Length: 326
Image (cartoon, rainbow, N blue to C red; front, side, top):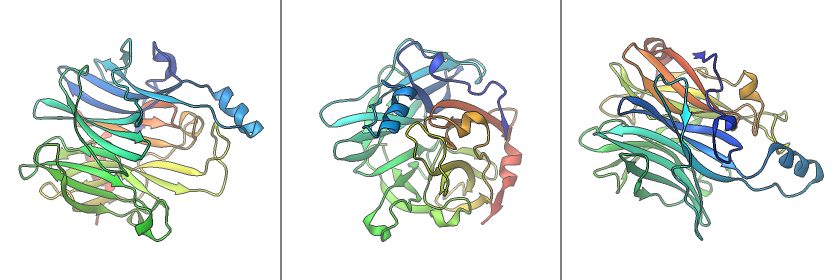
């Protein structure tokens, strides 16, 4: 992977409305341009968080909306004048972490939604990034959904990460990657395990789907995030952070994407740069977008330190070669 020399490619300073943290974006190609929906956390500052941590006070709140940015080259971005999606009422607290997939001539948006009765994963569609039709909302707790860019066996397919606690016998964050199918983006079932966290050498707690997969002749290339707990305190606004997030890669069977046929035995993107190791939560890399260009270049967009949005590139053949047979 080669990190863009322009990293971060998007940060709060680029946003013309209230913004503190800009990260975990979904990206797609749509109508001749690159479109990014990014998570925008706003309403408090780093100094306020650090003061609260030093004095043992409750942390200040952060609100969240989704902003939009457009680009001609996938590297330099122009942010829209206002947020495009913000959900908040007596039940819904916020919507965040978007993933974008173009399927059959429309854009499918996956997102996470915090509610007063649990965390839900959602699927919506749009054709103009102004009007969004919510197709389905999961029961708690499910997130990190990513829809494949084409039907498989006549059905829509998505990766997801349910968050079981009681059934994992005290392992509160032993979360894995699953797959579900749908005839219409509304009703999802036929759910089955894709890969358990214990199968990823660089994960000690949980894993989760990242960007929507891309089709290659060898299989579906799919990124994921992997988390390990470290015994040292990592940089963070809140002063107590011990989780390191990195990006992994797997290759899924074209006809049965619940079958993993290759896995990167090392992270493809570990947090090493200053913008990845320091921020709201340091040592975090969280991929959310992946574009395969006609040249064979793959663009991977990722949130860094829960603070900024970044870009790294690689040749698709090299990425496939990193996935050792299972």
